[in-house]
Image 1: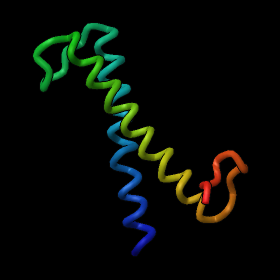
Image 2 (image 1 turned 90 degrees about the vertical axis):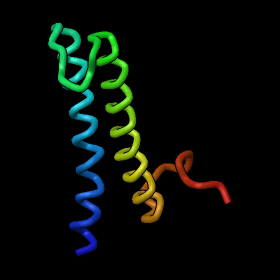
Image 3 (image 1 turned 90 degrees about the horizontal axis):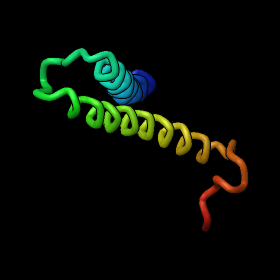
Image 4 (image 1 turned 135 degrees about the vertical axis):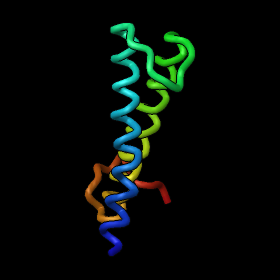
Length: 79
């Protein structure tokens, strides 16, 4: 059950990052999506979604690998 919860926790930011990429791509091609009134507003929001989702997933993986001592010395926590 814990693994399923962890998977769901990782899927939500992953979908958010994918939606951010879609918003940026649609702005590039001039396609306005529903919740945004202006085309120029769509790109920065998509960029925030992408960076936020990617950062969460990357932080989760780094935290997990630090617990298992599978990171290089420069990424280990200083004690």
